[in-house]
Length: 342
Image 1 (cartoon, rainbow, N blue to C red):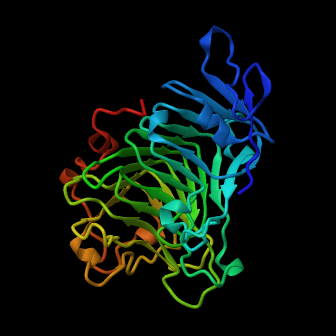
Image 2 (cartoon, rainbow, N blue to C red):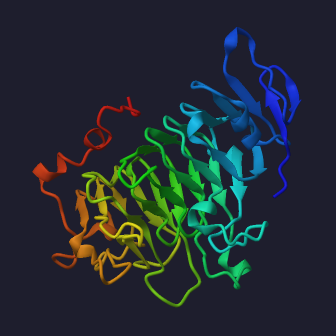
C-alpha cells in the first residue's frame, strides 16, 4: 500500500516522515493532518496521553492503526461535519496480503483499528469501500470499517460505512470486558454490521441497512453480538433508530455469534427506546447463525421500541423486558464508573 508520509504540525508547516513534528507553544499537544499528509504518521508521532490529532477536510486513503501505547488519544475531524473528513480503504477478509502470507482475515481487513484505552474519535468518517461485485473470486467478504478494542473507547458524531461487518466492537482478551460508547453515530451495512463481544452502548445512533441485489432473505442482520458468558452486559442500543434502503422485512434485527474460538459465548443484545423501521422483519426479527446456538437461548431482549419493525406479531418471537428488568439495562449500568456522556 502506498502511504504518503508527511505530517503537519500545528505551527510547523509540513514535516517529513521520520522526523519529530514541531509542537505548538505552551506545550499544546495537537497535530494537524491535511490532504497530502498521513493520519497514520500523525498517530505514530504522538506519545503520552492527552494528544489530539485534528484531521482536516479531505479523503485519506490509508489504513490507520492506533496501538495500545497511544492511550488517551483523540482523533477528530476539523470541521465538526463527519462528511468532510473521510478515512477509507478497501481490504476484505479474503484479500491476499501483498507479502504472500495469506489473507487479511476479518480483523485485519479493518480500515481503522484501535487497541488504545481511553480513545476518542469524533466528527469524521471511517469507511471500507470493498465491494463483493468487484471481487467475485473472493469468498471472505467481511470488510471492516472500524475494529475497536481497549477500555473506555468513545465515538461521537462518526459515520461508519461498509457492507459486511462494518463495526467490530471487541475486547483485548477473552476474559476482559472492554467498554465502548457510541453517541450520535451513523452506521450502515448489510450482514452482521455491528458485531463483537465488547460492552458497547449506542445512544442516539442511526443504523441503516443497505439495499442488496440478491434473491434471498434475510438480506442481512444489524447486530451479531458474541458476548462472553461471564459478562453481564453486551450490546445496548438506546434511543436509536433503524432505517433501511431495502424492501420491507428484508433484514433481521440480530443473530447470535458464537465464535469457534469461544464456544462458551452467550451473546447479549438489548434494544430499547428505539424506532425500528419496516426494513426489519417484525414477524421473525431474530435468526440463527448456526443451528447449534439458537437465538432463543441467548440474551436478546427489547423494551419500549416503536415503529413497524418493532411490532409484536408472533408471541414469543421477540423477548420483552419488564419495567423492573429494564432498570438493569441502561448506559449507567453497562458503563459503570466511566461517564463518557456527562
